[in-house]
Length: 399
Image 1 (cartoon, rainbow, N blue to C red):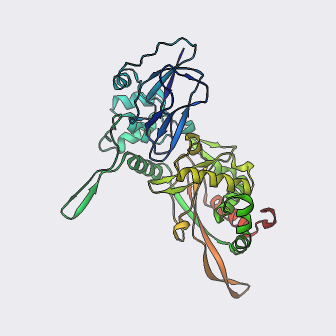
Image 2 (image 1 turned 180 degrees about the horizontal axis):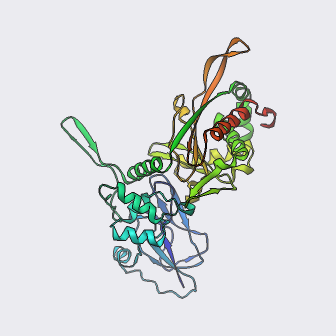
Image 3 (image 1 turned 135 degrees about the horizontal axis):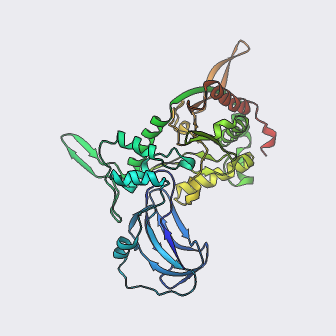
């Protein structure tokens, strides 16, 4: 039996990947979960494991070629009997036998509408699904068609998806890259789907700032990585999500789906843009576990070593514009989640305490939330819970 191997999903906004290197050639044996091909994208470089043990029967995309998510890459023969076809032209094979990409989660009816209206697979991938697990429904496609003025040109396999520039008359015109175009569509769709409402809270971080200054060098020596303010904020956010589990939900097919696990997305800024690795089952981790995992993911993001699973399945997101010195921001919700927390810079400010002026380390938190489900009172209590957890943090439990 032959098993098809396709270009996997690589996370939000990533719609294509490039074959960097085949680690096996046709006729070579492969074991289940053994890496047999290297794949690279704008944000992730990873090795793809074999889905089954067997023999690599066909390689359908040559090294250096770029194909869309869902495109057929290779076939593995699992029964040991294989006729290797090394002389078959790779481009011809990919063009003739590669099926229509199917990794985009869409209902059959939605796909039929997309085909009838000339919506390409790349366009369909840009539609934010409102169905279960982010599945694209007929309603999603119809709403997309209503706002679409003209088709987004699809990128053919192997075609470079890099921005082009032209300068004339004192202006520079830059064509959006595929990744940037998808991000733009999803951000617009998020604002259309979710009525964004905001609340901002003030947090006195003085105790944590002083504590971290005292133990940061010892912590790094003993644990092997730096302890940052973000780690405290992530832990406090998990406490708030436990206290207010409705925030850890999504809206799918007109139903509110409350998630048991807290999969916390943590935005990481890269030169190529923003990516959101996800700390899975974050509710099971203490401060040290969160700090270690977030550092691992941030490092993997910087060196393009994230795995596809590292950027999928988030249930709530934290983003930190404060690292650039900004007081606060109002981020856009990452669909189909119901909220995103923005973290501002920690600044020393004069504040009134017991009718006396004192200098304290103050931080602003901003919560963008979906007003279809989350009311202002819940949002306020959620931010207040984070504030209370940070201002009264059990510092003795850190080391």
